[in-house]
Length: 243
Image 1 (cartoon, rainbow, N blue to C red):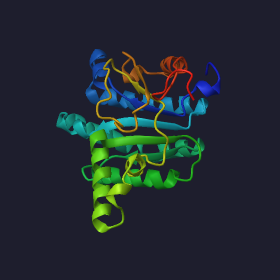
Image 2 (tube, rainbow, N blue to C red):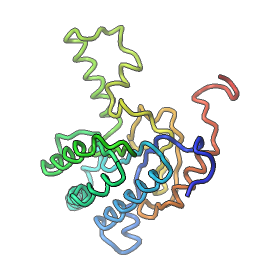
Image 3 (cartoon, helix red, strand yellow):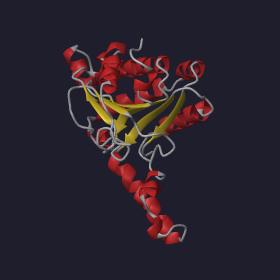
Image 4 (tube, rainbow, N blue to C red):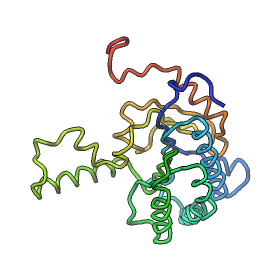
């Protein structure tokens, strides 16, 4: 259920899904059980976005720094990826016209997961409903660095001149170049930072922090974030009332 006019809703929501481990610990469960509950919360958020006609949702599923977590937890996360990308999940995505795409490095992920990711991207490419972008082995600094490397290679090959490089040149070589920047970034779990997530794309994004652990983030919690977003005046660096 929504409140307020559609014009007050963000077009693109990004989420840093934090607090799975702490939720599991508080409930006497394993870390993997916490991530499993977090996956269910992500499914529910997809439904909430569809119900509100929000067009883009980006989820920070696995950061570049997450490889430093205990090996057992990383293996559990990889196993959960395979579970979430199964045939039943695909059928549900098709029924609601959801498009799935992935951003991030792919040279460190297991071949089975890479194969599933490619299958999901290709099979949902023509869906015209909500676009869900999953950031896996992603870091904002890596994103900017790989874009800079692409530009350098194009200059070296003569495809591009240094004087042609501007903000738009960089933007076009970043992950999600074809999508609008997030209007709202939600972080659960009580921390108040963006932790190397979409550093370039979040320049003028409204930030919303909540103490709620990610597995407990439900439709009511999402509405609180949307209400906060609707109450803000977005000026993009301009003076109030300026064109």
